[in-house]
Image 1 (cartoon, one colour):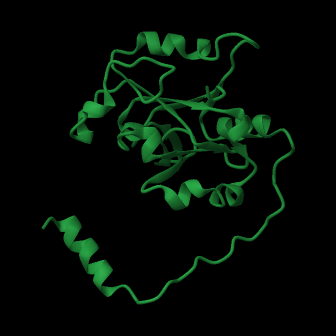
Image 2 (cartoon, helix red, strand yellow; image 1 turned 90 degrees about the vertical axis):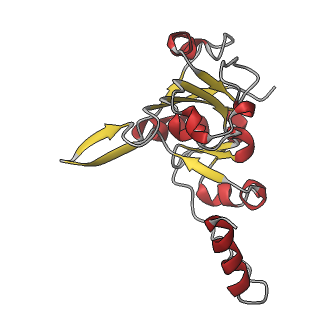
Length: 197
């Protein structure tokens, strides 16, 4: 039995009997205006991310084609972008340490925080969202929610074995008060608004 299995078995054995429901989520007044796309983009920018703006009616991926062309290793979890690292063949998450660009689709975005949600289904290998140098996120504008309370009401949290909200690229400001991006994870996070096909 591995350490993980032993710990989980101990938790299951010592868990109090009965069913304990989560407390109800309160409703808070939205802290954003009615244009959720603009509010999401503003919050994303504040957190160090960027929204890739394409020409109206043009190729939504045009704004990130240069980054994709410059990448040596691309791990794509979406059919819209071809990658050269097959995530289905990754046996050890550490094998993704050389990924230049990862492309994934978000389940939804949150306007109030500029966050995007991924589950194990979108990432395929959870580590890809942390080990890649740059993360490109496809997001359907119709899937932008007003706030975190609306996000928590979505079934994605209850049904996913793994769910994570990303808010901009990795950052730290504990080194002499200077904000450093990419210190522990992706150096950039770019959101491309692209409806689901």
